[in-house]
Amino acid sequence: MFFSGTDSEKRGKEVRANLFYFAENQMLDCNQYIIKDPTTGELALFDAGNAISLNGLFKGMEKCNLNPSNITKVFLTHEHVDHVLGLYPLVTLRRKNPLEIFAYGETANILSEGDETRIFPGNLGISAKMFGVEIIPLKVIDLINSKEILISSEYKFQIHYTPGHSIGSISYYDPDKKILIPGDLVFIGGSFGRYDFPGGSLHTLINSIKKVNDLDVKYLLPGHMGISDQANQQIAFSYKMIQSINFY
Image 1 (tube, rainbow, N blue to C red):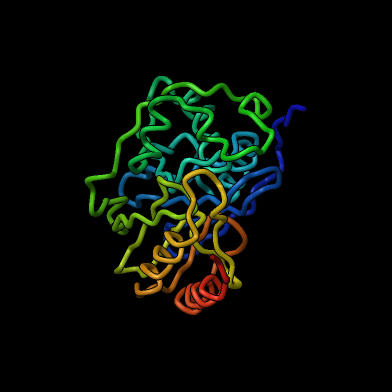
Image 2 (image 1 turned 60 degrees about the vertical axis):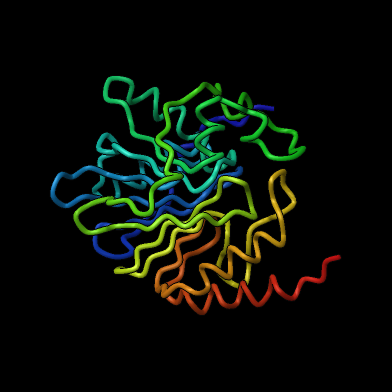
């Protein structure tokens, strides 16, 4: 089996000034977010998708008057296939002007080592080759000692370590704009991330959701499903639902 590239446009929209959302495509993809620096025009991309949807992202960006060539930084929420495979074609495209890639702890280690076995969690029966990608060691900036990062003149995010779905999972939180980019920690509609992959833990996931439930958030921008401008209500619903799980 080989998953060929798709030109299916990733639907994009501006969530608030210079912050854009691009909805996931099929085939193990993820939502992606872009912040444009109004001063320099540079673009910061949150999560890289699954590689086969890269052309679709570029098409969606162009509809939003964003030039893919202006992507200079990629910020990752965690190490799984649907969030990181797009790095490899991006790195190839930007060989002359290398991207800065940011990740946390184990995610940074996995990508730096080129450890394909930990990018594809559990026994999913898939590989990088099926996505037309070769996993190679990447130069990654580890955010493990960073409390916050300045994305642009408008956006500054705190780094919150929120494992449970994976060991390297983090959430990006802008307290001024009340924005949360939690990866696969928590979703809308009472949903939350899987905890049955290697490195996952239900107990840890509950604690991580509790952490973000205590934040003042308006915009919930998760890795899958839709987004919400009623974030605190959505996170509280997910926290309630995960607490209702009986486990022994």
